[in-house]
Image (spheres, rainbow, N blue to C red):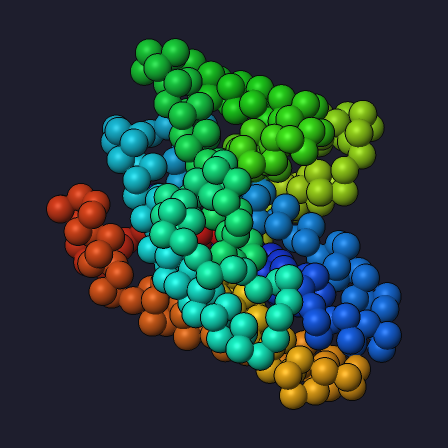
Length: 374
């Protein structure tokens, strides 16, 4: 059997586009540049404000799809490692660059305060607030966020933990028997996903917990299993039918986007072009740096907002150009952050130090399946 490809161009393309939409959403959401430039293109700013954030559903589906590929490619948990150790390693991959980005956000907010006063600037952090972020408990503890999108990192870890715990429980129920283990895993994951789609995701009070988002994440996981080579189309049709029933009960655009993404990934895998299309190297690169762009764009946008607000608060055209500059600089900063922080060897050594002592400095799992999907 040939080894699995380390990159999946179709997923990289989805990540590249979605990460750019999230940056643009935050530029439209957090003023004052967008407030001043609004009259130049109100329809575009309104769309970015209201709808571009839905791109996060693409990342949720991709995360579930890749988690299935990594943890249970044949439908059951195959590793013998303890789940807490696996969860700890996932935490390291997420939090090492995330903690560095939080420090950049603190510095960016401090700099922005010198040039403007605005609600988008986080207050100076306290030590408990910083620790709540590093431990990914800031949502649960209802702590003010130090950076836009910090909630997603915490939810990503929760979702991984929920899937891992479900797969571990399914394997225990099946008592190591492979066919029963596959059926138990698929059935239990589907049950949690259905509970999310029909209940938890319809109540915003649950939006600090993984069960609120597991509908989209589970669609990605189930889509991976349903698209296995040689598998009939019926499982994929059942996934679509259940999701459509949830939408008929309570239409949510976020779930419609999640379903479309899951079906796209499944059909791409079945058709064999998940690994082959698109072949544009630039698109693949933006997909690889998408997590870094996500982590560092907020302080960049904050500082550019403060500069433009101080130097040219009135002219809409200059503020619109400031938004374009902030978008471009966010990608430059993301590329630098990816090169010197996310994929830096000293940080890989740090992960190895706090992980298994037998791991090499170069992490062999840093591919499309293991890299954080934001």
